[in-house]
Image (cartoon, rainbow, N blue to C red; front, side):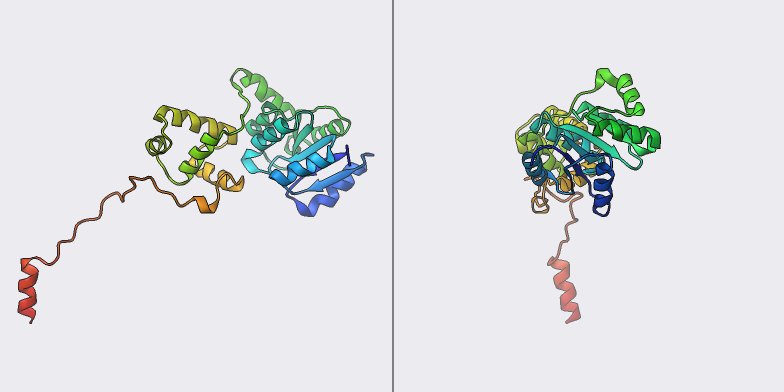
Length: 244
């Protein structure tokens, strides 16, 4: 098959509704799925859709990054991120920065939402007014997310295993300043703010697995150190004699 509209959503119970709504606009060959990552790429390869619509929360806070990765793989694919509930405008902005063609959110008004749907289904582009304003204000500082390199994936694994910046540098033979720069890039790409959010996101995106959360730095030691307990001394021997 070739052409048509691909809808990607975790809301499996709503798949029939999405399909019927789009088909009611006269669009044929509508396919709805909740498959992600490599499975989704396989569907895109086979279907070659004219339009892909993805729920903005499909990969939670990292959907802008993951859609950017798909855009690099399928450069000519028309992509739209759509949200039915509250979604941070700054994250919405990064859909467009990372190469997604359209973004709109029902929370910004039902009329704008319906207009956005009609636009993208007719092959046009639509970006919500709030996101357009965010881009206009911050345009000089916006940098598209890049695909995470193997070294940055190793940094992610170390962070998720609780390594400090110094320990990551020693483990990967990098300078502490390089580790800090990598961490900033990783946080920006995945739209996370701290190691805790990175941990949850890395597991969700399968950047690390449960089996990889078993490593300690080679100089790992308990802190504070446990107090020494001195036993078997002369006084202990005398006390034993008295008890006997």
